[in-house]
Image 1 (cartoon, rainbow, N blue to C red):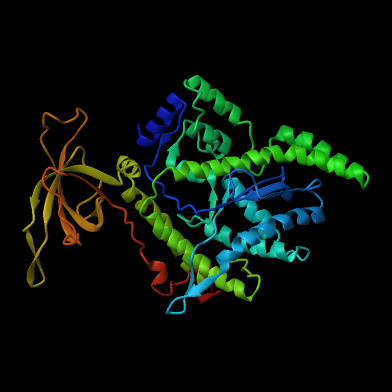
Image 2 (cartoon, helix red, strand yellow):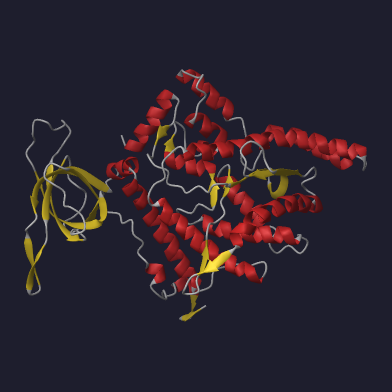
Length: 477
């Protein structure tokens, strides 16, 4: 059984989530802007209700569209939210320039939504759906530009500008349910932070089942939607004046209670994450956010930024390389920072751990015309590492120290070995940056991994050849 499956089984057996990380791998701003909203089922652009704010105790504002199929009413509701978002983002648009003339931002905004579906829906509804609409108010166009940029950044691993609460929580805890079920924030919080009064597994599971009935994402419960549709139709048929105001109030009363719970639950998720100590590599990822935001803020100086329908032939490979690089580097950074994450890497074969049984600091090897110092160690592992000779690995304690696997050979069993162990002796030679840190001593337990926490820099090394998909008759499109 894999370590991840074992954690799922333990969570299911106890009715309580199991930690998947010992550190917090997400940078959290001092006052993240939380947004919770609902749309009509089957109508991703039909805003029903939205609430927002930075204070956990109460939202800063809300808007409910009593007739979400009416475009004018939708724009009126979006304009209230857009103005609030613009006011929140305005201080972050103040940038400075370094000595090379590159823009710099002191901080980047952080928008937090209940789950991944809400992040996608927010970008679609209030971003791309409004950006170039001729009838949209100017405030909505500005907010749409901000959300479009955040939507583009959302696909980059490690970014913290548009954060689904469920994604952040799932990175740090494992529950006893399927991944798709973890997208219900109410149920996920019941797994991670159960009521202290629920001392038995049966009580906790019952509370989780009750929480699953709440819909905190962009879509409401279908049964509740059917009841709400009756109120929406009544609003449309009511005469202007007191009758229509009364009908609108009934819609608000039906929509807002669940939105308030979603708003407070999203803040509660951020508070749970704050209880974990911040991982060292999170600061570098936050710096990348600030850098990318600074370039966007510079574009805002000339008015509402515009975005191409598709990436240009020059930008497409650069952007793809950057996204691929982040997807490889961020998991590696998390593993080198966090022993619980590294344990999963070891379980999947991406790392191995053993005891140093031999150290030769004075070993020398011939390189061209000289004999250079190449320290050697022999590590006794409980199983054979799944790497061929010549594979380069990094010492988890000091990831900058690169070693090469020179040989592997079976070792005799010893009294303290586990019955399932198949011990091997792995010979490694340190090749890079071994002078900066002390070498591991005999008897020390060490972990080596194949992944690199350092950016490859391929997307910053110059022009990248165009893919054949962007060429036409041998000429770039």
